[in-house]
Structures are given as structure tokens and as C-alpha cells.
Amino acid sequence: MPPIAGQNNWSFVIAAYAITWITIIGYWVHVHRTLRDAQHDLDAANAAGAK
Amino acid sequence: MTRVRQQGGDNWRRIRAIAWKDLTTERRSKAGFNAVVSLGITILVLFGFALGPDAQVLRDAAPGALWLAVLFAGVLAFNRSYQVELDTGALEPLLLYPGARWTIFTGKLLANMLFVGLLLVIVVIAGMVLFAVKVPDAWPTVIAVLALGAIGLVTLGTFYASMASRSRAREVLLPLLLFPMLVPVLLAAMQASKALIGADMMLEAGAWIKMLIAYDIIFVLATHLAFEHVIEA
Amino acid sequence: MTAPASSSAIPVPKAGSWPLFGWFTLAFMVFSQWYAIATSPADRDMGDLQKILYVHVPASWIMSITFALVFVYSLLYLWKGKDSYDLLAASSAEVGATFVGLTLVQGMIWGKPTWGVWWTWDARLTSTLVLFLVFVGYLALRAFIDEPQRRGQWSAAVGVLGSINVPIVWMSVRWWRTLHQMQSTPQTMDPTYRNGLLINFLAFTLLAVYLIRRRYEAAMIARAAEMTSQAAALGGH
View 1 (cartoon, rainbow over the protein chains, first blue to last red):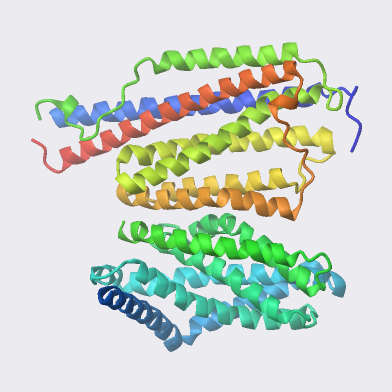
View 2 (cartoon, rainbow over the protein chains, first blue to last red):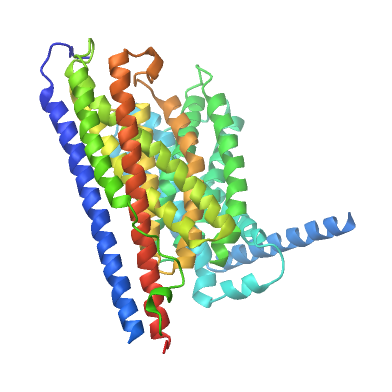
């Protein structure tokens, strides 16, 4: 096992946090887009039904 | 008491009828079985090429290659086992017969068990020749390991095929669902076979065999309970 | 059709104050990560890499929660047959798959400087990968079936069997090989580390709750829209 203490590993730390936030924001956007599309479909269906 | 026994007899008759029907169809068209066995042996030959001509390496890799060959060939068999019903539209009438649904699953399980068992015997013999594996001293235990591994493989394979074969893209769906589920069986069966072939110095095989038994019991029960929901939907 | 709002056969869950909760959760995540990084000194053995654990361990914790949720909701669906249980199981599985994928990538980023390789066939890494594949299979099955009733029954069966398999996979892979460091319980850790980790556990749990709830809301609305347009096509007035 290579020695780690004292070594500069900030690039790995930054990469890990970056991937975490990319995943969270990406999935967040996906969920809200799905939500908006579904709401849109429901409104359209209701409007068509009311006609 | 007599009613219980009567019902047990009915279930057993139903299981036998389903298994018999599947095996008869399979026997009438030998082409299916022959093709699956040929595929299994072809995979073994390809593993031989991949792992190089070194005899010791081949011998060490033999259990893994054997199980993967049976796994890939078996997947074809599982999808086939529902194919006849689907092609002829015989599944709905089958469900209309009175009686417990799980008997259909048990019947198919037994038929597939025999099918894969036969496949396993042929592939194992071919593998022992191709990979230069000597018959180990503990051969009765090896046979037990093969049987236990086959039970796990066939149980989950038959169960997942009942869904995958009735969906779009069944060729990809069955292995995608089945292979991750089979990781414990494959690990246990490979490691136990490897330990037994190599004289099992560390007495590892016992622990793996216990795990195989537990896995088989758990999933035979779970699939029988879940089958009713799956076949009616 | 006179009252289109009430014509959908299934009750649509309301957004309520969930959007507010969502923004609060995001802010809380930023705070908890800042707190953990700011308060922790570099670890004696791991150096700065130890800071990855503040997002890695909570992400893997979400993975275990979502697996339990898929199991419970699948069983509930098989038992009661209510659509909402099916969609809750599916939402949990999707969030779970996302976090398992995240856990794997974080683990690889941690493993490269620690072990010198991106991947080792260590017990926890390998079993997590297998579990990821189980999740993927579950979601693929759902994507390939259109009829809601059948999709619900089948994926519930796959969800229950997959969850039963989790401990077996874990045990078998551990027997097969292990070199991962033993799980450190909060009691044996330095209090500064423990507080940072605990607050991040809380933040990730809130995030998972929020995402599952909103994903479920979207799925219920989509189902309602489908049923409404079907009813209209079948000759609503």
C-alpha cells in the first residue's frame, strides 16, 4: 500500500465532491423535469376530457 | 385428512403432467437439446482458446469455464420452456384449469431440471477431457455440488423466464435479471468444485456447500410463493 | 365530463410544501459538507482523502435504505395491490440506483490513491457492483413492460427476490475475497469526525426522502394523466 499521509490528494477529494454534486443536481433536474412533463400531460388530458 | 391427501395427490398429478408434457415436446424435437449442448461445448472450446494452451492454467480455470458454459447454454433452455405455450396460445387455457398455480411452476422446474442436468453431465464430461481434469477422489461430493448448483440455476432461471419470455426484448432481459441473482450460486459452485478438484486442503468446500443448500431452499420457496403473482399478470 | 379535476381515478398527490423542503435540503447539504470539511483535521493514515468519506459513507447508507424500501413496498404491493405501493417501490429503486452508481464512482476515486488501482475485487466493492446490476435489471424490466398491472406484479416479484439476495450476495463475495478495511462504527471515531459524518448522514437522508417523494409524485401524476386520456378515448362524453 503506498504511503498516503502527507501526500497531496486534494485533486481526488475535489473529484469526489464534484461527482457527488453533478449526480445530485443531475438527478434533481431529471426528477423535476419528469414532474413538469407529467403535470403537463395531466392538464392536457383533463382539457381534452372537458371538451 | 383424506381431503388433504387427495389434494396432495392432485397436485402431484398436475406437476407430473406438466413436466411430462414439456419433456415430450422436447423429445419430439431433439434439435433443441442438441443445439443447446453444442453451444455449451463450443463455449468450453472458446474458453480454452481464451485461457491459453498452458495445461495448469486450464485445469485451474476448469470449474469456472464449466459453470459459465452451462449458464449461457441454460439461458436458452429457460426461454424455450415457455416458448411452446406462447406460440400456441396455450398458457391461458393452462391457467383456466382448476388447482394451485404453483404446480405449473414445479412441473416446468422438474422438466428444466432434467434438461439442464443432462446438459451438465455432457458438458462436464467434455470439460474434463478438454481441460485435462482427473476424476477427483471426492467425486460423490462433486456430483452433489453440481446438483445443488443446478437446482439454484434452474429455479431462478425458470422463474425469471416466466416473465422475460413474455416481454419485449426477452433475449437481453433474462440474462440481465438472472446473472446478478446467480452470483452466489456461481461463486459457491465454482469455489467448491475448485476446492474438491484440488484435494480441498483448507476444507473450504463444506462452507460453500452449506451456502448452496441455504440458497436453494430460500429461492425454491420464494419463487413458488411469487409465481402465482407473476403468471396471472 | 363536467368536473375534469375529479375525473382521474387515482388521487394525485399534492406538491404541498415539498418544494420548500427541497430547497432547504439542498442548503442543508451545502452547510453539512462545509461543516465536515472545515472541522476535520487531516487524518493520520488517510490524509485529506478522509474527506471523501463524508459523502461516500452517507451515499452507501442511502443505498441500503432504498433497498429496504423496495423490499417493503414490493411486498405491500403484492399483498394489497395498490398502485401507489408499486410506484413508491419504483421511485425508491430509481433513486437507489442513482446513489449506488454514485457510491461506486466515489469508491473508485477513493481507491485509486489508497490502493493504487481504480478497481480491486474487494468484497464490498464487488458486492456493491452486483447490487447495482440488480437495481439496473429491476429498472430495465419496468422499462420493457407497458401494461401497469403486469409491470407492477412482475417488478414487485423481482424486487422482493432481489432484496432477499442482497445479504446472500454480500456474504458470498466476502467469503470469496476480502481486503476492505473493517467498518468503523461512530463510537470508535474521533468526535470531530463523528459529528461531521452524522450531519451528512442526516443531509443525505433528507435528500433521498425528498427525491423519492417527488419522483413518486411525478409517477402518480403520469399514471393519472394516462388513465384520464384513456377514459376520454373510451368515449367519455
